[in-house]
Image (cartoon, rainbow, N blue to C red):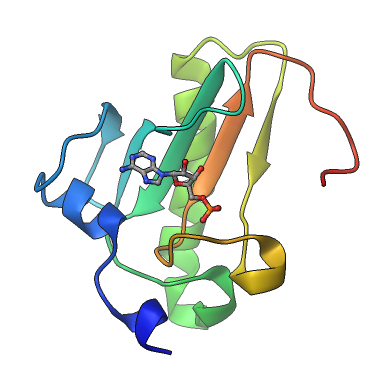
Length: 117
Ligand code: AMP
């Protein structure tokens, strides 16, 4: 699908072509605040490598995928989410994904409901 192979707004954030509130970066990943926060803390963690969605990941991506989870933990610690938090990956149309550059949502600062909508 064209929309899943083209550059996204997150690619522009990685390249500093559009502004974002970046709170963490290393060689594999970058984390920035969601522009439309759904909780007091809402951070997105993305790989610099543009995997469109989790369903497209291949076994060779295991290192970066593990790194994203460790980055989520690091960011949660950095944000002081000692009472817990939620990590979400929306995948594809039914998953509610809107930006086709794989990303983890880190949500915290309030109690989360279950099940999600
Ligand atoms: P998803 O629906 O899982 O694909 O999530 C995409 C997320 O990206 C949404 O929560 C948006 O609010 C967020 N978002 C879109 N554009 C930007 C941007 N320029 N900076 C920060 N967050 C963004």
